[in-house]
Length: 265
Image (cartoon, rainbow, N blue to C red; front, side, top):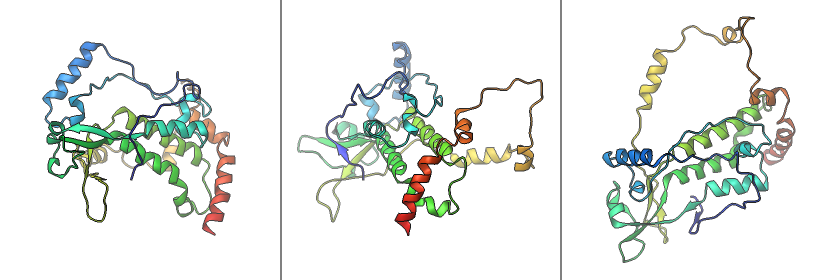
């Protein structure tokens, strides 16, 4: 269960340079209003949109060097890293109205905050990022099972890339559904009702399409043997590959591997 914050927390402005931290550019007001009108026409729009106007804009999620401010979501644990994750995963308790609650599919399962027709809720998108952060902190416990012979050369660079990419996506397309609370047996305070109704794509359909258009008979040796025409210019090596070749992560994972041995012996 997430640890909830009743008050909004703030980041120390002196801790991080902000120019590389992911954020959205504001759209023209006309574009925002257009998005708002589209949301109003959609009966599946989450109730959070009733009093919140999301501002959408393009954002390039570019991989930067590991020590850059913009790479904080894939950096090793530190005071600055912990502060950033605490900021973006700060699950705040909200007060919503009866009208907002009535627009959710679980209006009869929701905990009333007091006798004044007010209810408590949290935003699903922040909750999802909280869950992802919990996984980030807990990755080591599966490590001995999946990597009994030690970590592969690409382990650190690959893992940090995945961590950063998924966090970017969760922040780019956040769920604005409410997670409400209910009264439950064997527990006195309200507990979150994590059942959420979402408007989703048919993921099985995507997998079917992918399978239909898959390159047939392409094996890994065939892929590894691919080479460009000598006349074609080559792009600068990606940062992720530089980290693999430069063994950027070896020292950190050697240390954590030793720690894991003591934990599992």
